[in-house]
Length: 398
Image 1 (cartoon, rainbow, N blue to C red):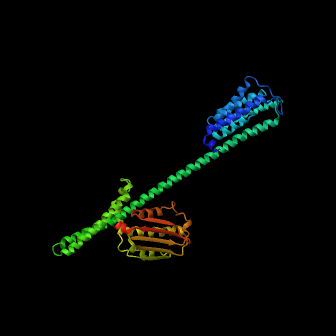
Image 2 (cartoon, rainbow, N blue to C red):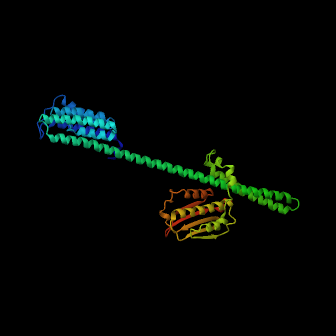
């Protein structure tokens, strides 16, 4: 069956062959039916049988021509009181007409062929060769075959339309996801710009201090130069990282979109020291904040990204978690890594913010991935939702 669906032309050829063999055998063997005696075959009658069945092989490609081609010789056989395909070929062609022809062309062809068939059968009734029931049954079967084919065509078109819609929706979803990632990269680039600009400002101030103290206090000048070196290394690390983030961005797009007006109006970027203010501003959520380890030694860029992860996770809780009784935010800086953990006891596991649905997780994953870390998000044991981000601070510093 699967092979026949995959090879429709071959399937039609096999159907035409089976119909031809059956009709020829019936034409040459049967001499009497329940209704009347059958005329003996002549030299030309098998040609009519072949002409009424072989065209079925092209029923999908030329349905109108096939209907005419099988109807005319079949009517000739019936008029000569010879056995043919028994109108089975006509019904198959009528079904194909409904299945592969639409609109005004279907209506006109159906009406003309139907009128010819009814007229032919009615003529047989007038000549007392055919009963009235035959006229009714012929009309019902013919119309039923066309309606069945038309319904199958509509179902096929509907299925194709649904597949096309699904593919278009998938393409749009991927496009939106790509756009969201690009926007998030632009945001990261702006924040990195602030971090690097801050480092350069510190270096300039320390360089001026070292220049003034170089002769009077060489030790203090040495300390300033060492601070310049450390700050410069950190700034270089951040600059390399930002270039890595933007390596796939269109040169004429994202970076060019950062205007001087945007830079002038941006507020200072937060650090992990601002988490207390973030929790205090989130009075609608019962948040518990737990910090362990020295957060002051973290690079500024990691502090900023960790703060944004917490901020986005709290935003997702508001949107998707529903009523929550407790939200736990934990930051742990041990063994050269910063772990950020946000747990809630809401219904986030069944929300639409799951993997591949919302774009907040894409942004968080992009932020953590910049530093070579990883982010996990999903249902937690006992109910609720968990977001866990790990920043390899030691590797970044190295």
